[in-house]
Length: 568
Image (cartoon, rainbow, N blue to C red; front, side, top):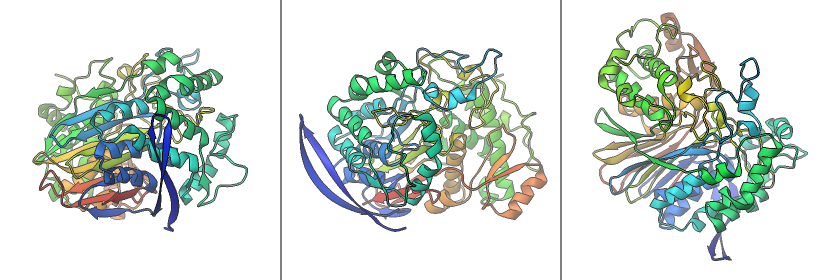
């Protein structure tokens, strides 16, 4: 990978006066780094460097996570965002575990059947493209809520993003190809000029300048959270809604709140797993899947043998059946979480498991009481104080709704498709749901995002997460099993082939690089395989776990994209 030199100016603010500090970064895509003080892994090298610079300036992992997210909104526009939402899981140096929900919400004008025609048939284009598909963005509220645990001023954290937007950054080959591929769709959904379209084709190394986005970020710098949810930016967003017949109002923006929630916490083979609770299904699914394979000797079956894959697939099948039946926003619906994750329930779920043949999803339904694209993005951070942060954010689909807010320069999400548009009708990722995840004003749509931290003796051992829609929980599940049960290195745990089952459709999505004999054995058991080139883009940090201030840090960025690790 050729090196790209980028001059990167940091602006610090004192009232309205800016002092300019210029620093040059020569960067490349770094897939693995070993260090001792702190590390950041994200979907783009410049974003990882932005987070690392905060650690080097005395900030903590929260500071680095905020700066990385803001930078991703500039350098990774397909999923990094200020027009979407996300979740944060953090283990703090004082031993506290916290989870922050800044998932998007349904606008007040939303209703259960808003995407159905007069015959009751779903109009999927309305829930997947244009401003009609957008929920109320939560990212900026989430960043300001997480400032509670930061050390540096917000002005310093947002400075890299402002300069990357205002002065521009060099496109990687994959980014240039991506913008060229999406050109016609961008033109279809944006009648105004946007930064992502130009007459000629984008080339590797071209500079992408986003002046409208820079202006939006400056309003956030000077006005705080109100710089997004009120004032000029809010007016521009509402105007885009009115132009595209969307539903978000000025009041929806003012009323949005990020929510601190109680983390999902459970034990797996001597490790404490800390993950995201509802409205993310990820933490519950993770606890269910790990619970269903525990005690079945997976560590003796061999890495990615037909036997070990089959056991994991059958756990995935049952967990995703429960997702479709029971899960939704806990502020709106009752979800029997304690039962879903209980040992007795999980043992009962596996009673019909047959290690010699494939299960069937028309037989394996949800249990009785007695269901995201690569266009999500994840970042993992640790610092030298003992803080660890796992953050997953999203626009939902690739470039979200495909609509850029005119004058504000950012893409809007298409998260309304993550609701159950109609019970039993799959969304863009094939996930189905029912009334638990039906649309309701102010409700948060069910998510698959699974930011997760593993602790050993109360000290961080692993920070993990990935994009990938409904494949997110299963990729995190596999990464944990790869390390804990199969003793794989961080790099192998991330980069070795992945597979996925989500109850419906009843097939195994499997990377083509899985051993051919293993695939034949799975087919002989009765499984239908759907071969794909890549699943997810997992970001992992492993730590030695000997002290709260880490001595050995290994940070690995997934080989499947431009993801990059940075550390010192």
